[in-house]
Length: 283
Image: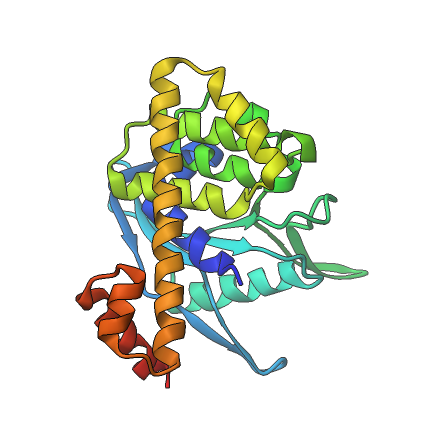
């Protein structure tokens, strides 16, 4: 199972200002970029449904040249939900009560279906009185064309193109272009791995698509080809490592001695011991 909320939270918290630059430039232009402070995870109990819900990302920022602060609340929604706008209002109300600061609410709709526009307003009205009209900024990825982001020198664009409106036949091309854009950004290895892993998670190709992917890469310049292939090689190495670890875990579950597991898998004794500890904690 893909932990969509974790993946998106990691992406947005790592590249928060880049996210604002890409989708909310007016907000990005108003804030002191050195003032961004992520606040602790908020957990709300919904007594009507009996569920506990965590908000995804809450940042306190300061206006440029001022001491005045406000909050930016970003929520990733990976599935469609009828009463979602109402839930966003509840988050807004509780956060406003706790922090007593203005809040700029943002929703990133990241599901593939449906393609219809999602509601971004919650109203409470009576025939003689408009009590409430709550709105939030909405970014619905499946209604955006990946081609519009090809020339954006932004790591969030390189990642989120993989979740935009992509005709099936264009999936290999999009994956290649995500990596081409990523290669031009010259990120440090950890950030590079975060983006490339995000793309690989959401654009898994079958054998036929992989052939088209390789053909697309071959049309790039030599420098771009080399850098993209380095990323692909790192995926292959990571996949091989995970396969070894899965085999080791299965052997350890069967009670096979760690020395034998080391010989069979080629993992180091330290790595096998870590896996053994992991199994013990799970049990």
